[in-house]
Length: 197
Image 1 (cartoon, rainbow, N blue to C red):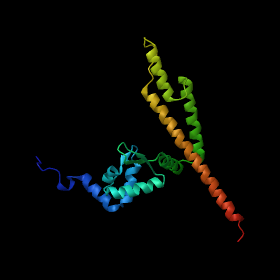
Image 2: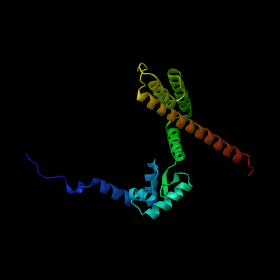
Image 3: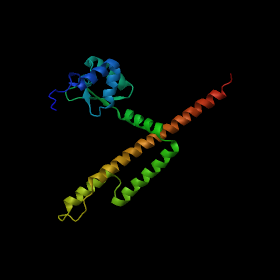
Image 4: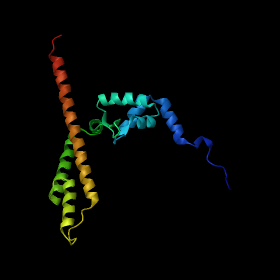
């Protein structure tokens, strides 16, 4: 049986249909916030506006509000225009909040201890304090010796070390935020209880 029909017209441009639905169901502010949440390199307000399906003026207004709130970092582009990207702070807070929602404080302390131990193992095994130092040491050894007797460090090892270090930083931030919230909540309760009615 030979079916010569093409795809149904309804599916001709699925991306456009999904984008139209997204635009209909969200506000320009929500779309801009979504776009900038995934923007790690500086871009213009026009680029954000295009991705968020809104006007550049609207994008600029909301991006400036997000910058005031610490969600967005700004920089000056080579032609003097303002460029926008997600702030590192907002990413750290988001990651820390996600960790706190999924991991108990006791488990987080255990995981932090395990990650620190693994970092110490890397440092002991390779005789340097960081993956960047390891890459430099490896390059220096390669340049200084004519015979390639030195073992090559697997690039995956360097990536794993960097990932471990980043994850430890996020876990430490989560623990700090969790502790701060506990003390703030505790301070509020004790203050409320100590106020005569």
